[in-house]
Length: 382
Image (spheres, one colour):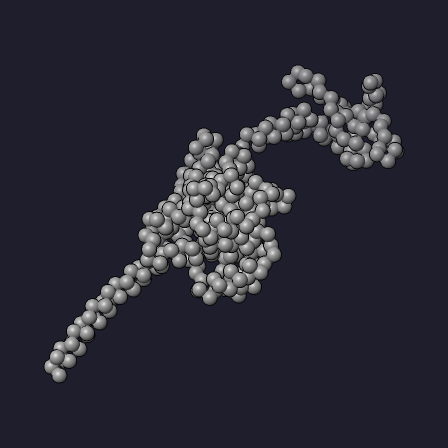
């Protein structure tokens, strides 16, 4: 490609070539020439119309670059590349989160992604953890608690702490100089239903036409299984012969085995097996949502508005066993696959009430015997 002729101007080191604008009209393109560190440099200063460039403006740019007030085009390009490389090497909170997701199978990933995108990313997503101050965490906490419940605040801060801990363990970032304090939340909600409500629910389930919503609600009631565990449940994980359900990678992280009772067996045996999943979604793939369908059943059964159709039935299962007086809390912990006995303690008051009733019954029996004896004495005297 031939070099176009440089035409001198009245300003030293400023030349131009005759080019064409984007509209097809003639347009001058100005160049400047100068020496820096013994090297002759020629670079574009700008176009006549697009950049409003004139010989005098080009001369000013030339002077600034000779004096070091401006970078040359080559130096500016180099700086931009270095900045890009620097940004790529920066372990920001957002970059850590992306890396964390790639290397960790996360339960409830959609919920965590929503928390990150709505709360964490807008405030500190582009910051590196070592640049964070406790003030940044306070700002995040205050923003979330303005429109959300305390549990959401706690879960958001817990997610941030998890992300940073991941980066520290893998030596990607240094540890924070302060601890991210999680607020205490007393939100242990134990839901329960009366016998009449359970009857109404089972009736609504039997009348419902959704292929898996009703059966999932029954499984939650009969086994206490979590929603995510039912979404993931495959036919290969059910041992009909021995009467057990194998829970792979449940919430606690360790595979668990729970009994397959008669009612749960009946529910499963009534389902078609045209997918590897017991409660499949579209096309036989793993299901990820069932809220609309189970809420419709809940509403038709006339259950309370704040009752959670699946998780609430897990609580009903736990409450029924605890209040029966026939199941100790250790056994209940195993059936509910609680990692810690602290989670099972929410049912302790139900068991205590049953024990009180049993104790009172003993007192009533003794009292009745005493009354009977007094009656016998009176009859003898007569």
